[in-house]
Structure formats: structure tokens, C-alpha cells
Image (cartoon, rainbow, N blue to C red; front, side, top):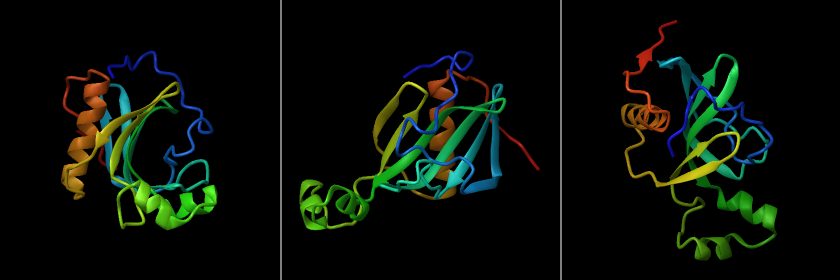
Amino acid sequence: MLLDATTLKKIDSLTWHSLPDVSDGVLPDEVWKCGDLVCTILKNPRCKSGEDLVYIPYAIGVKRGTSLVLVVSLEQEDLRSLSLKLGCSLRELQEDYSTKSNFGELRAYIYTKEEREDLGLYEGKLDMHSVRLFLLDTVCDTLDIVSAPEQIKE
């Protein structure tokens, strides 16, 4: 997905059940300027909808001014929560997902106002350096930003 940062519309927080809450889990040392946008990396944010059907180890919220226009998120479906919500057994879901874990595969997603795109499995490490590179690279690639992200020091 290649998007134009100047035409992205504000994301409606109620559109996507798994959209990360960009006010939760903010890492104050992980605020970056990517072109004219401000990107904030989040650790373990809740879902904005309050329905925590996914576990989000990391995400990045991208704002133009005060408007949230893009989110990149690493997510795992929480099979325990899903089983309660769907009224089926955890074992059934584990069989469907081919896992013995309480969580599905770790996948990357991009959220905009109009779309939630599945980027596929995230196979990188979950250390801050690897995640930071992945999230910032994904933002810059998606928005065709060629300048290097600059950390905003507070």
C-alpha cells in the first residue's frame, strides 16, 4: 500500500475493533518526526474500542497535526477473549488456529480511515531496536517518505 500523507483522513476510532489506543502505552523516548508527521511508538496499548480481542505488543501512531491518520500495529488474536465472545471452547479455536498457545500468530497491520491491511506475519525480534526499525520503515515506505526519521527529544 502506497499512500499520500497529505490526503489521509483522520481515523474514526470506532471503525476498527482492534485499533490501538494511541494514548495508552506511549513510550516517551520513542517519538519521531517522519517528514511533516509525528510518530509515537506504543508498547502494549489497549484497543481503543475496549474490546481487547487482540494482544498488541507494539504499535506506532502517526499524526498530522492533531489528527491520527495512520497506525501500524503488531497484533496477536487473543483466543481466550475470542472464545468468550464467540461462545465456543478455547480448544476449538486452538485447533482452528493450529496452536496450543492462547494467542494467534503475530501479524502486522496498517490502519487508515478506509482500510485495515494485513501485512502478514511479523517474524522479526521483539526487542525495541528491531521493532522500531520495522515500524518506522513501514511508515516511511507506506507514505513514500525518503528522509530519515528524526527522534524528537523531550
